[in-house]
Length: 80
Image 1 (cartoon, rainbow, N blue to C red):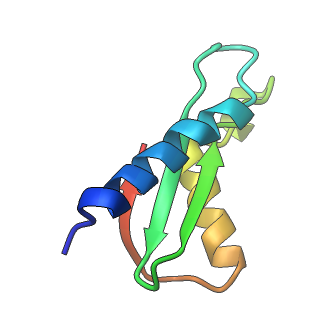
Image 2: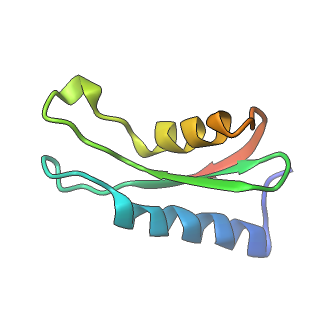
């Protein structure tokens, strides 16, 4: 099932907090994401812009890459 109550609030809060780490000097639009694994761990990420637009990374991809790089490949929910 989907996260509810305190778990949902935590996921939303971690997504909101991740925005503070965003590097977005071009768009000035910070984005945060929080990814919940099926094991209950949360990985957060932010957008990272680059002068070469196609090399920028969105917050969702950052969170997914962090989780996968630590061995997590099964996910339950994401807040953006």
